[in-house]
Image: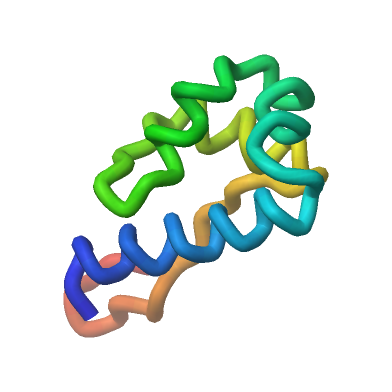
Length: 78
């Protein structure tokens, strides 16, 4: 999967979750973001910054985490 495809899928999921959490107005208020900016961020061409993404997820009771994709034993990285 390409990076662009991953981002597009993330935005689709965020749009669906936003609907489930009461819509853009409700999530924007909870995340302390401008609703117009949230609409743009969640649009198919949106490119949310880390602070916006964190605020949106926090408003939904979620957080971003980082996990290894796989262990890279052959490269010497543990």
